[in-house]
Figure 1: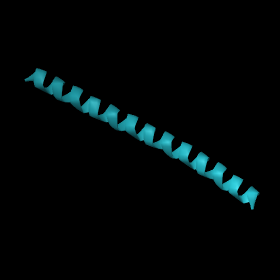
Figure 2: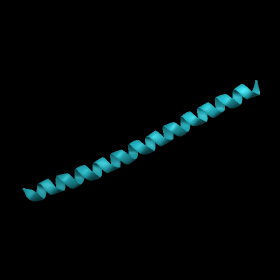
Figure 3: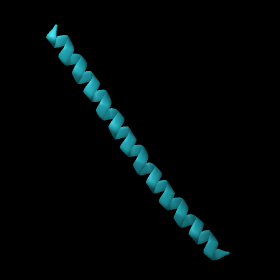
Figure 4: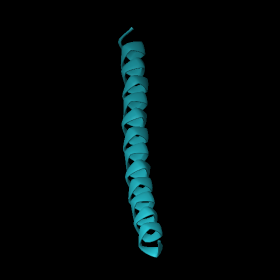
Length: 48
């Protein structure tokens, strides 16, 4: 019985870590995209 509980906890821990990693990746990509779009918009304004 205790083995099943431990296995369930390990699976839940892996799932939680996966969620945290994906959120960090999404935040990183969003920050990169915002920096790139801000830089490109500034360049286009300077050209005009």
